[in-house]
Image (cartoon, rainbow over all chains, first blue to last red; front, side, top):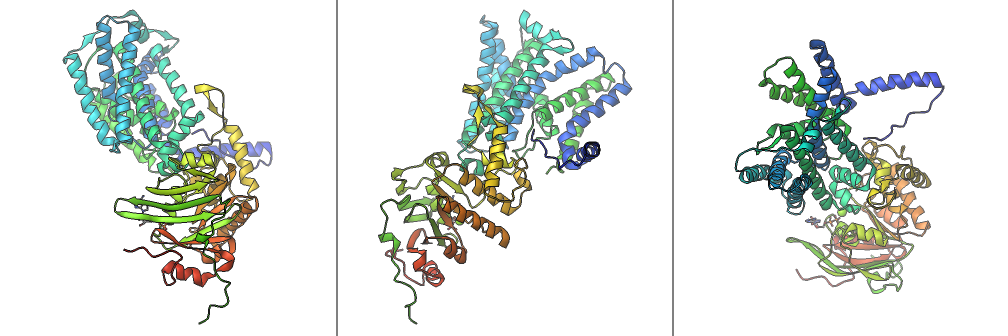
Length: 334
Length: 271
Ligand SMILES: Nc1ncnc2c1ncn2[C@@H]1O[C@H](COP(=O)(O)OP(=O)(O)O)[C@@H](O)[C@H]1O
Ligand SMILES: [Mg+2]
């Protein structure tokens, strides 16, 4: 969170500065705060290690491809963050992305324009998110069960619509989206970055964002002051759904096809990025920066291992280890 | 034993003033099988502290939750500031001028003091969907609110999690007092506090009364009730069985009314 920490009175400038620097180091090393920084510390460590082992890790080309590879996960992690901030969880986020991708492909193949296909993908995400949110908040059914059901239903629906087959999408603008870049920043990463910035502003500089954190922190207290907690809970699932829709467009652009694939790694990594980012799974405490760095960390981990020639089979294992380590750190939170 | 010391007690139930800030008539509510309120009637006057006492489970919290829009009573009438009201949400009650300090401290621990003070009362700037929080304005207003109540709450930027029980209570009361409220409801505001913190909160209550706020105070502390209140209602088993001007009653009578050793002012309900 961006709360400014009030320093104690300042006696004289230089000593105060030194004291503050010392305090800062102590503050960073304090386990309670280390959890908030776990993702950043982990990212720096990974970068240093991988760079030492393979000097092409930090080449402009590799950085660019890592950022592009991270884009989809960043978008999903931001969506997941809103849900987790209300003490919920969206297990269907990756399946909804798959469904939206298939809808995108089908609409696009039917001859409708790119824009129509993109809007259809977003609408698909929004609708599934709305269904999730309404069942959870009005039906008062556990988020875990509801989104687990949606996970299955959405991937099943994707299989039915696509008839189990991938559909190649050939489109100039989509190709540019996947390959175009400004400096080392690919377009898709820039889109993810814009989404993250907007999400940060929404979470910390709007009433809605305050209500999200209040609902997650203490739903009873929030509703006693008049915060419409049921609506807030519904809204965060819609946000996650819409972001899954945006992610589906990035995915189709990246793969060059709309496929009804399971994409379970994206689900696990979206939750992992949120945990790495120091967001409390109990709700009420969240940042956007944290999960974004968490997503970058997970992407860098996979990229670095690939670069070192480590078998793909080790990737899920390493991600798992990192996430459990991060979760261990969060025990010190508070 | 002779009961000659006390002045003849006038049952308040037969003495509803024309300009009461709040009247509740026959409020009833059931949660499944539990009939928490079985036709409770009471009223509160402007500018006064009205106390509600009663055993645990008597229905005090449920009654004030009906008044503050948390629950909608199944039947009965609530009149506030001259109008019959039916609050569907706490938001509606707050808009009408009823602020509540709930028993279970309705603060969000992970938010800061100022965020809690302005929860659902945020100051925003800009237009339409682009309205952003004016964090700076809220912080400085929060500073004023806290310091005007002369309570020792730490910097308004600190998280509520780090506050003591008394400080949290002060923040809750501060919030209730801060928004031009006509009626402030406090549900056992000192139940969890130490002696000094209790004294502070009592000072606050006296202060708010002197500023013209009407206050509805639920308390288990008879001495406190006798010290602070102008009128007192006794609840038993979901009904307000008796109401007295505080000056015309004493601890013994109140205890008797709470336990049922003394008959109340209303006929006892069969079964
Ligand atoms: N939300 C609720 N659901 C079910 N029962 C409730 C609820 N709120 C209160 N009750 C019941 O109503 C009765 C009155 O409770 P309450 O108003 O909290 O009493 P008091 O505040 O006087 O101690 C109790 O028996 C309590 O268990
Ligand atoms: Mg109570």
